[in-house]
Image (tube, rainbow, N blue to C red; front, side, top):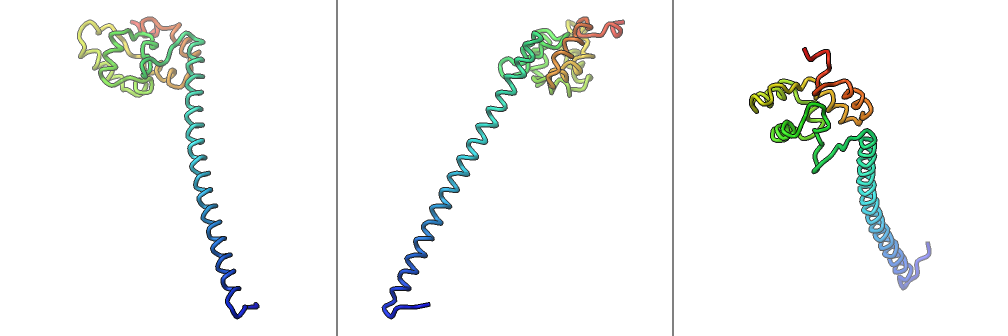
Length: 160
C-alpha cells in the first residue's frame, strides 16, 4: 500500500468510505420505502380479495334467490322458519350472523323464543342451526334443496 507523505491517500480513502456509507444509507432508506409500499399493496390486495369473495358469495347466493347480507349483518330471514319478529328477537340477543346462529345451542334459541311469549311457542328452531351453517359456508344449492323439504322450518317427519 503506497501512502503519500501529505496524507492524500488517507483523505481519499475516508472520502470513499463516506461516499459508500452515504450510498448504503440511501439504499437502506430506499429499501424501507419499498417495504412500506409492498405492505400497503399487500393490504390493498387482501382487501380487494375479501371484497371479491364477498361479491362472489353474494352472486352465488343471488343465483338461488338469497340476499345474504343486509345492513352489515347476515340476513337471518333466509332461514326457513324465521320471520321478521323472530329475526328481531335473535338480533336483540346478539345473534346477527349465520355463524352465530349455527353455533348457538338449541336450548339458547328456544329460551329466546320462550322468553318472548306465547306468540312464539309454535316456532320450531330444530333446523335453524343446520340452515345457518349452510349459509355460513355458502352452500346455497344445498340450502335451497333442504328448504324445499321444510314446512315452517321443520322437516315433515319431525312435525308430529
